[in-house]
Length: 299
Image 1 (cartoon, rainbow, N blue to C red):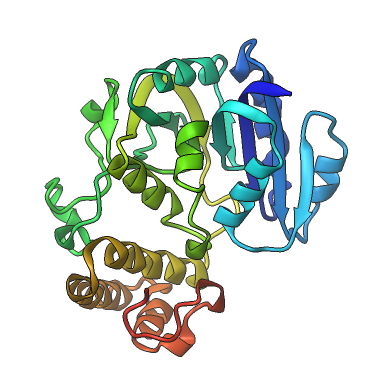
Image 2 (image 1 turned 120 degrees about the vertical axis):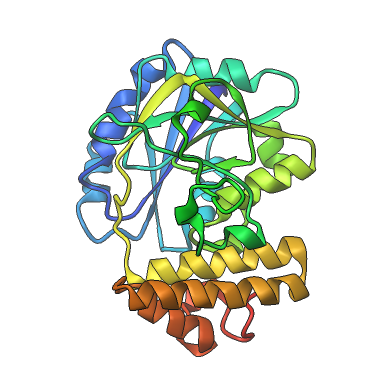
């Protein structure tokens, strides 16, 4: 069997969100053929019970091998498709969202498409990002200057269709050919930075990531919560991504700046930054799932 779009979802304690997402897919597909595969990464709530009550998706119970591994598993279990729709469980899709994204994806050279995403209250969710640089470690993002900002905040940037360096991975449509050429998501990241890595590697290979305001979706965010551990993963993976692309010497400076930024945040009262600062300076404190505990500057 071949379908137009293979939708893939990874759940983790997502019982409060998954039904709403799955309920929006038929109208979002608007006549396209599609499949839905959900990989559950070891939920301990009622997620699997809810999935078991549905007939519109294939649910695959799994241990928590990470978000990237879950997506790759879901893609491997899906039928052949023109495109892969990567979805967070705490997202919902507007009617006709998928064919509108697919129209953009079919344009020559496009490999990844991101829609216009809203917050739960209907306001714009700034999902577009600039590539990681030394200046964008985070300490000067308050200036509002693009040179220092990775997150694109200007609403005007969300009014027209254009190429971007990368976009938040809550809702992404990926050309299957591109996904396979990239060998899927890099599972070594476990959680965070996998979508950044995918878009940047795709761009290196000639595939563009494109934003379109003509397709809409909602992303609540934080559906599985953020802890000090996941914040630490986020910061460590940013360093790992930078090192893999820029080399160890520049990554050493990037690492030092990240430590300073997290220390400043901790002093200003961000409680998750204290454990992160300690984990940056003491590799033994880092989450074992990342496999980044042997070197001071993680690889």
